[in-house]
Image (cartoon, rainbow, N blue to C red; front, side, top):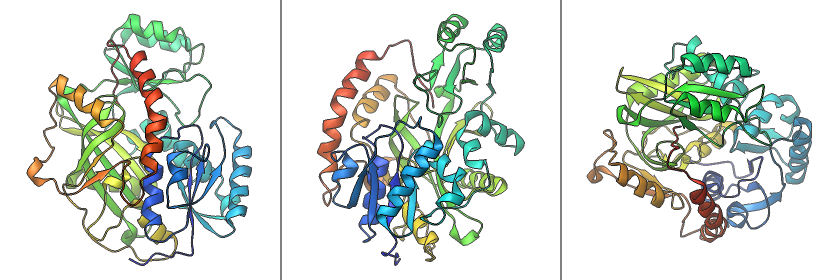
Length: 409
């Protein structure tokens, strides 16, 4: 694998979330190969900014609610500073959608996969993804999308509980989102109480709850394009997440799953998606089907879990492909696991108390390599920077947590 070290990369994000191991992972992945890596950061002391592999931290404080033209102008200014065609690596939906919707304006300064108009925004939208799944025969959780308060009240009269509430378009940030995250609702009274805050236009999706006792979470990461030989595809089973059974991956292990790999590859081909993506599937043992819950049209935070035997991950595959290099053919490394240090201790404790086990998780004897989300001996500074940023928000989250609420992703 011989990367083009003349072509720099920019890890792009909008909004305030300085503790993001996926961005640090992307910086390290390309930086270790000698690729100059730039990063958009909130300030000069974020984990991404202090990495030894960050060529330059571009301090740009955004909320993600800015008009697209303003974000476009800021991105083009960064491109001018870098001075040469630069690979874009979005780490959130806001950035991925902006790049996809402003492809023509960005094409002279940046390298990125070309996608059909409107596709990335549809995939990042809960309703858009649901519609695509129905159109292409992909199983997904049953869902309702009330447009008005009257529609929501009518839905409540016949709803089957428990159900799950999510923000309909998570890439469209609001000053006050409908729900803070994926939220379980146990009865009609709880739904109506939440709805009091949603106003006349709820902006939520109300989704069938898939009970964890009858389900199992899987991850698929992929790089794909119109050229068949540019595809790299990985599968893993999620062992723990935080919040439990809901949020970000805390620990997962690469596990072969040919059925799910083929299902994911066929779906991307049918809809014409190109680039890197992170898909969250839930296997429902009640009907024996994999149900697509999320399609993130960008690198996932846990992408460093996955490597091929040729030491290619998704970010390296993207850089190789868009600079005209060949992606070496190789199988994924099986039994490789990721542990995210700032969330896995709490997740481990919660899973131990619930006695939940993941049936498809390989036994420890078959675990091979371990990737840490934050610590790296050749790049130590992001770890203490993460700790400094994580302690206060973590305590605040624990204080605000309520036993009556659980979450499902």
